[in-house]
Length: 189
Image 1 (cartoon, rainbow, N blue to C red):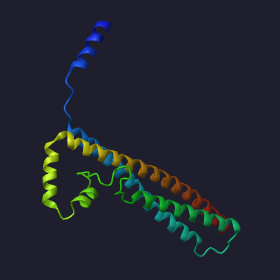
Image 2 (image 1 turned 120 degrees about the vertical axis):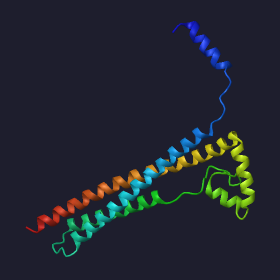
Image 3 (image 1 turned 60 degrees about the vertical axis):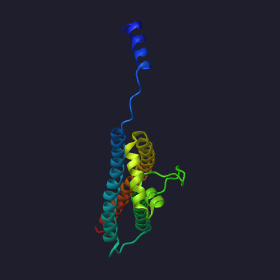
Image 4 (image 1 turned 180 degrees about the vertical axis):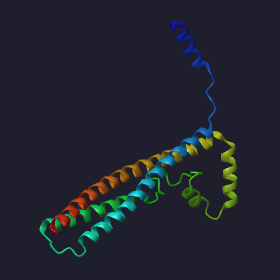
């Protein structure tokens, strides 16, 4: 590419009219971020189900086992604590988040259910008018979508962080349960 053609491209880019806001693209981005939230929730649900299996395994290994040693007791306590940590992290991941601490409480996000309920409680006709105005103005719609995208991105990040640690805790619990099973198996010889 020559310098002359590069200058022409830059000049054309500077003089070109700025594109109009496209709410469809903002909606797609919001949908993508909502998918990330759903993925974290699904991972937490699977990890929680796996925790139920691990809890049952711990119970079955401990129940009726008579050759209790300090090592056995330590493994039971370790596995149980890791299991509690796993379940707690899964529960924290699955807990709904409806408070946006970054937002001004007086601001109205016209596409967020909690904000709509808080600011338009018992005022359905007034909200219908607000929604009509919002959908008629792509710039305003994109502003509200941007607020929601930002809030959901934060939620997605938090959920992903907690589910990551829940999975790690579940794997550590599995290792403790495996050691417990080996100890029980060896003591039965």
